[in-house]
Amino acid sequence: MKRFPQLNKVIERPENNDRTYELLTLDVDFAKGVTGDRAVTKEESQSSSGLLNVMIDTTAGKEASQTRKGTLKIVLISDPSLSRSAAAASVLVGSNTDPREAPGLAHFCEHMLFMGSGKYPDENDFSKFLVSHGSKGYNAFTQPDFTTYYFDIEPSALEPSFDRLVQFFVDPLFGESSVGREINAIEQEHKRNLKEDGWRSEQLLRCLSDPQHNYHRFCTGDIKTLSKLDDVVVAATLTSSTDAEAAAPSEKGEESASSTPLSSSTEEEPKTKLPKLVALLKEFHSTYYVPDLVTYALVGPQSVDQLREIVSGIFKDLIITTSSSSTDSDSDRADNKEEAFLRADPFPFYARRLATEDDRIKALTDSAQIAASQRPTTLPFRSKD
Image (cartoon, rainbow, N blue to C red; front, side, top):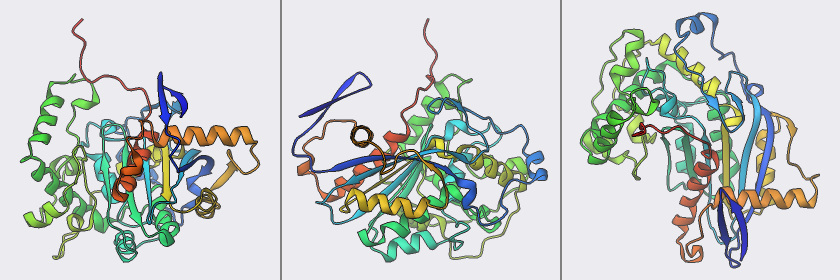
């Protein structure tokens, strides 16, 4: 077994592991992919001025800012035993970064990113494409310090589906027609959470935590917290309990599920204008959804070379320089493969060869989460000393 040191641990890689790993680092400018003028205007900036708390990015060693340039990481995992492909993305921002005036903003941002981009403006384009190409599942969830998006797909459709996911970070529409509907979707999630012991226990812990720590805040948001900034009451739209349950997160700890049943309604919903909230949302996205805070992951039966070609095709117009390319030395490439392995599988393999295909695909989500969330954090509870 080959042994890798990481975080004062020793990771054992079984010799029968037939996966191939590679870590790419790309210097990109997300602003180069914007197809229209969707930057925060001067008037919008003034309306939300002072509400967004810019946090320190301890991984990159600098403050996150509204510059869209930086270095993103992409973990490639080739597994010839798979019959399907999958992709995930994690960004190092979550509910702990919500402004005090708008609890639930990170969760709201997660929802709104499913509502179209400049390149794919149809609100339902992402879900329709995945379903039409055999996806068995797609979802997203907001945690206190990171947010993750993921899906699985037929191998032949990995490139166009991954491109759609990348556009969440590059050029989201944040359309006015989607705001009221997605606030209602979050309200339905909140009502469902009120009945679940896991969520009730979570909120109790938050209430007992240090009031000065961001963890103390209400994390998911609801109609009241997301509309109070504009002093507007968003009309509630009733969603059947069947639809709500169908869209419920399948795993403990997920704070939202941006799947089609929860975000869709058969009735025409009123378009409520919330200019301050939307301005704050745009500022939040442009500040934190930046390359330095993003990690993508791709896994599938494709070779590493094929996965690298997919990445190159999608990011070719955004690249400033390539930090890790085919011109790297053999030793550099070996280091990249080892780091990719550590990011993707930071725990022993637990007899991976016996795992089902669904388990293997689910492991990708863990890979992207862990790869993106390795950062120091402050504890939400006060010391007894």
